[in-house]
Amino acid sequence: MTKKNATPTLFDLKLTVINHHKGDHNEYLRISIARDACYTSFNSIEWKSEQMSVTKNELASLAESAGQEVVDINIGKKISLYRKMEAELAELQERHEADKNVYTEVTQGEVWTHKPKRTYKSDGLGDANELKRILG
Image (cartoon, rainbow, N blue to C red; front, top):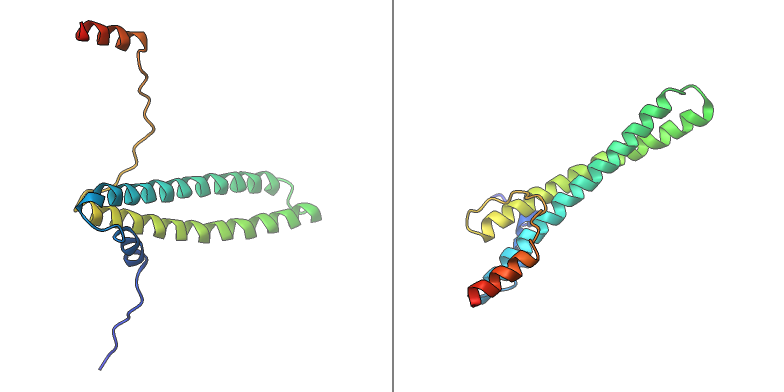
């Protein structure tokens, strides 16, 4: 007889938290929480990737002077930092995948995709004048 692993997955844990808000009247809330989690985890990946890029550029700059004791110590520290960032990025990606899967579950099949910030600008007085015209 084998025992089934009862340890909940990250997906299970996140879904449980969202489903704490029960009822049809909380459907929008559940979807909003799932969507916000996706945006947050996506932005975390973007931020970590930018940090890694900066560190990589610093390493490239230091590599030109490799062989000097102080520079080599700095290179060692930056390599250690970069390795930690790689591990953290992997965790962030796992989190984002769980968030996207929860969003799909909560929305009953909709797949979350990153949408860039809106660039809509009101035409200001044009709207006000049109509103006056319509309302008479």
